[in-house]
Length: 442
Image (cartoon, rainbow, N blue to C red):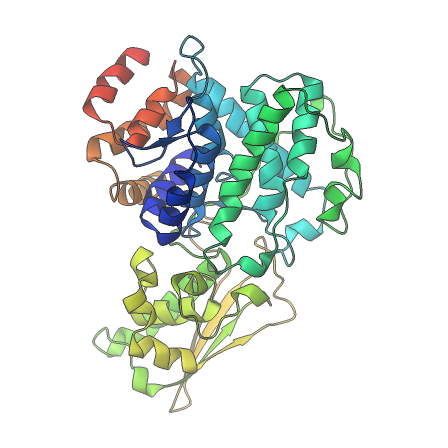
């Protein structure tokens, strides 16, 4: 999860929304600064480093997803990395410290989500990372700051007042800000709590607290530490192969399978003129039902676009969402022939949804395929080599190869690293000098 999040965050530094928030954040200055991923000569105060790097992570909707539905890593990792750089030089934060804080941030999100059955479905009102992600970021930063029990409760209470963003801004440039704000606000909440700012210490138990975000929120007492079952031992994490809403990944695999059947006898070219209509059976998810997307962000949240793009190309990639591919005439023609259907048994849950794609030809023949579990889902996880290829492809757009390899080695040996600032040095683009220093730290 850490390696994948760093990769998509580095790739995200090339996006328009990232450049806008980076430019905005330049108005802030501080004696304490943290790394902006992919930049050797530009740093920001920790709060805004967490914000900018968090935006980068979600700028393409390429970051990890789990069940119950949220993006768990992007809200936590930028915050704890930025905070780790704010400690005095004499108090080094180890890789194990960083890893433990990250795990705490993920665990807290999962516990809160499991107090609601509503949270197990694809959301309709609030974007989950802005709710549980903000709380998780605060918990992770509180752990890294070694706050006591009272201050930890205050950190979570403060974070709850920063939480929540409506889904109406999905498929716009504002949606990546949800992750950036979750990282920033969680870090800020922990820092305020460290100064004894107080909040309602029962906020996670109240209908007017966390219950405001989930109508069926029903918190329960956690078991003792001796009998506590850690969610990280059973976490359901999906790693995306292409940058789009997770629900579209079922569509891509089903549509790619249909294409393979269609082109068997047509010289590998889709017989577009012979297609009468395309039927895509998916759950009813309104914000991913976009029959005519006109921007990369709309295309990333469109069942129809991904179905047609995968039918035309046989697979999906970062380039699928380039403007020239979104506007190509063949895709526009296919979009006009595409319709969604919502079978009653197809529930809007990342655990149980499926996609069936059917192409109806003008001669009356139909070709169909169904995906119940796409490659990258927790039931069919990416192989280690494929996850590394994704990271290297993403990171190499921004960093030299030596720094990219340094990140991989550091992440895989994180619990042995004495000073985790070495990770930030690689993320900034330092390579040879940082590598020699790293060898002394392991």
